[in-house]
Length: 621
Image 1 (cartoon, rainbow, N blue to C red):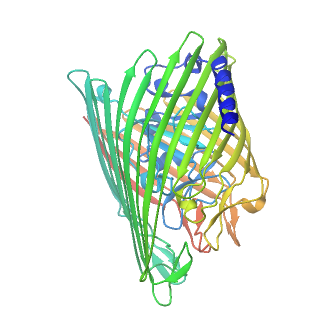
Image 2: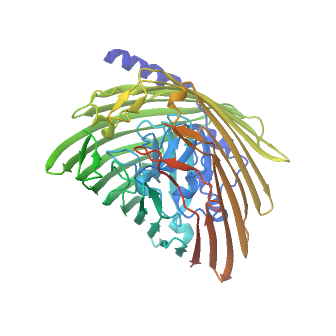
Image 3: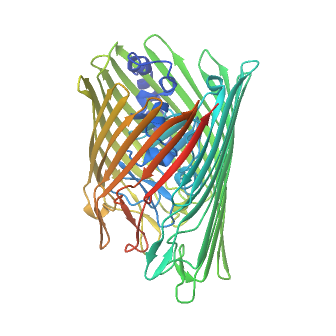
């Protein structure tokens, strides 16, 4: 078996060395290279959506969730704990371990649950230069574990800023936000940046079976970076304290609840060879979460894994991640060969206290990977992509994984303004700790995908069409009664398409989108399968404004039907002093945004964002 895998890898490596193309140069021919996203974008890695610095200002994207809630093929919703989850169309927002989020080159996904958004969704964007979102399955170049969607947050370059900004914000729902960013170039080709952010959010009052509750959240964020003599050091921290909202009680709400979650990391990177573009990075993360829920004699907490009614439930998870990775590029006249690898150790320790009983568990994983991807310019307007990656996962308990994934693609420029992309890939979704904890016999989910994109620009604007097909074997699901994850025997087939339109007229920008996803088994449709948006923004001092309408189709969850959502957001920005601005923004203005049913109590529904008005003051220096 080992020889067979070696032969497969060697054959694919030979293929990659023969085909590929310098796509960055092709697709940048008609772009402004002074924009930082032109230097970081990886067109060969999928269907790319770029949120520029101007977009962040134009549409008043204050936090990461402001960006993600309109993302095609997804719905940003809260689960019954009030946590924000970016779920694929048709799939309920319980967990999503296949969406990976990076700050620069560091992945900030959690270890036990793998999903990052419950903690990082509300990070302010005042220190962010731009965001790149890669849709299209199994991009290999980012040196990450197998994933379906990659979100890359790129921070501002301090040597370009030599200044900063401060923001204060108040909400009509008694919430507030404060953030401070500063970045400076230092002597000796060095640079420094610093960011802190703090927010407090309180939801409207929600009622359930004669009882009421609110969701309380406090978030703290920090980021610091140093560039000194070719070394790049960065660190970030996030801390969240909140209630558990609907919680895990049999009915109504918990008598009291509290959730504390924190994540901190340190990353050190060095370019060791400019000739072969080789960078080496070492990193370490520490993540912890602590959940407490108190019930009452007539309203017990339903603890899970195993399921049992209790008066008191406390779950604490301490986890870590540490590793080293490398990445390089060898550039030639007609192709660019990218290569890299990673060695990583992750683990967690879980303590589950329910009344007087204590359950303890721990697990760990050794991860090893190596990849190579080549992009080759057949003609000045035609390129072929080939990539292969070997991954190995060895766990203390749970099935080990030893596999090869690959992807091939074709990118064609019909002119400097129009292009076509086609990708085919074979990849997998491994079971993660939160799933293995409930079922150590889980098998990896096997995926096959074919996706395409066509972009065409006329005098009327730019039209972008995407479409694809994904086949999934051994899909990992959760049993709604036992809360145990399992592999379904059914093969799921997803067919999807989207249409985007972009038009710029002077300082006005118009963006529209519509998408549709169909799954062959209707019983697995538990979230919106269609959606879209309309955005119109005007950006120019002294006054700017925008409107945004997000649509998500209605759907059934159990016996409950959820109406279609129409989430209207609008804002106005005005300069009142030199480099000083006041901003007004309204969320869910129609009070008709998509509602989400609680997983354990579908009759209880709630919004992602309540209807509210916020006012901000921003001063740049």
